[in-house]
Image 1 (cartoon, rainbow, N blue to C red):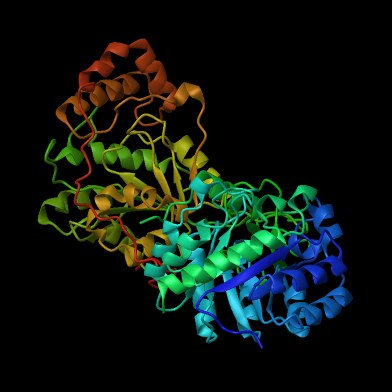
Image 2: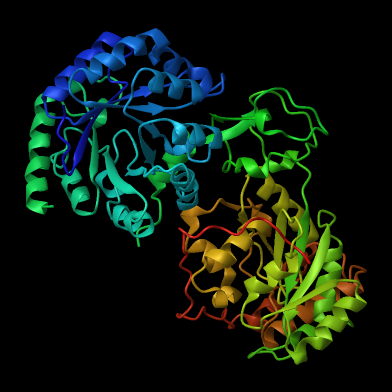
Length: 594
């Protein structure tokens, strides 16, 4: 029997067998003798992993073994006095690994939102490894919770393959962060992928041990010069044996906020992340059932995959052929606009009610939003302060619904406005940005849906003309997860400070509309610039119907009028605003309005 040590070393065979089962068996024997506690194989079938038109489809098809090969290989590997683990990339792969005696199963980061596979692994006998490289914190939380519910204590493996991964992309400090978030419920491991011939190849994992990793995974090969699959990161038998000795020495010596993905890790995530695709041809008008969806890798898929629960039960607007990735542009969607304003202002008191071109500023904003045909409902969000009664009266006169909430918590007001209603997409519109362009609202929402984003910005447009696009569910989650939501006047910072773990997008803009112009309403100088603009629009018969092209034409004709507020600076975010998240807290369930 093998001896259980404090630190487990896994020899990752992966595809180094080059598609030959006999080579795989010999590797298991060789690296068990070199000191591995476990060996690991990858079990997959091309049609379970990728869409048929994926550029890597034929590669994986050639590399995969038939079921009968695994029936022979796994028992032979176990006979080498090591544990045998398997990466499983689908239900069929899992069933084979379990049938032939695998001691544990590893789920790739691209499957951490694949509920059917997660649940099947959770119910299978054996240890569970969850790959965290390229996964957002919320995807990890989702997978961990499903394992805990089944009574499993999973191992979170940090690390990703960039052929090879550069030392500066390894981010070992992520281990300490994962320990802080999951240390009570998970063990940690490190899957090392730096170049096998790098002088640091044997020592880097030792640092991971000091940061809490109790499992170390290393790629192996018989001969790196043969340049086989994953040779970049692999150790040869003698190197691996020396590495094992290093780990054991380190083990004896040890005794008994790095949350942002690098560009390389994001690229890796984009390349390998699975998306929900149609399991069969689906017709317009059909309500999507869970069995209509299957997770596969999609070549050059834009944006991010949606959670399955955001798709199942939704009605399709168009026909969807089999194996086509689903995005929310294909679904019936509820969009609300939530303009947020209050009377209190340190730089321009009462600005929302100031008359501009014979119309209160806030009334002008309402008229602009009413032109947004993609918006199903507008709810004005303000405070319970007495001084905001006049704003509520103005909104009601304009036929706009009103929600009143805490004066010091913008996010709480927005979530309160949604109440228990099922709101898919929310436009956050600040009361200072009265020049919102209806056409860009439409473009922003459509881009948001196509990218399967949960936050989309329109940065690059003149300030005062843009909106921010949020998923309603994200706003609810932010309110629940934020350590302090009292700073959500600066709501954007809660996204940008945690950007790696949200599905974010930016609307591409034409050069003619990208201008660093200050057209927001927050100071007397701003009031002068905007008044001149809107008086001009009224004169040309476009008092509230102008578009961004009209604004650009105006300032091209009268560039000197931009000098009126050129010296004004945006109000700085207070340094006391706390944007950290409690990631291991259960998100609020999707709901909405009273």
